[in-house]
Length: 187
Image 1 (cartoon, rainbow, N blue to C red):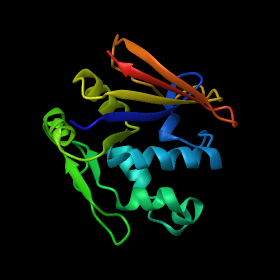
Image 2 (tube, rainbow, N blue to C red):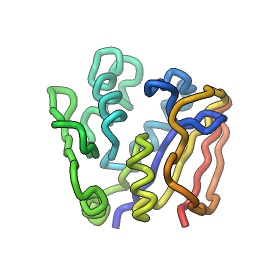
Image 3 (cartoon, rainbow, N blue to C red):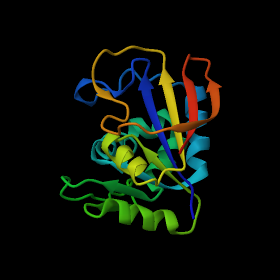
Image 4 (spheres, rainbow, N blue to C red):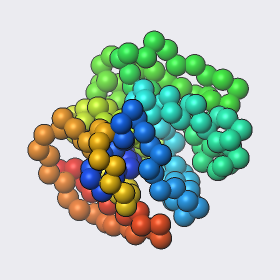
């Protein structure tokens, strides 16, 4: 069985995104980009919800995305991607944005099939509702939360709707820009 891990950014006040899906508060620099590349190298499949998909699809295949971080862009553009959305009518491949699967129904069952397949780890990016579903179904093996040193005041709370769920601490890593990576195992 493949390992499935979640990576999400959060503000100090516990929001995974600001109002209107704002992510401009993310502290991203060269050290973070190296971390992101290593993290993507652990996996061979990316799972994301609709908003994360639309954000990634509108940035990584563009000249700006490929110029800003060619290594991450190469991974994001070519790795197999699974988009989980009931409301998205379809997903579309382009010359630069390839290998996309769309799951609309039976999310837990379909994700379990992916996890039971062969290959490297599966990384889940963003999407509060998807993460909550995967945690409720015990499909995530590890949670990686990057705490950014900023208070944003409003937005989508991290794991909104999950309820009580215990985690076991695994590790922490401090970044020079003030970000702190916290890693946990769900119980």
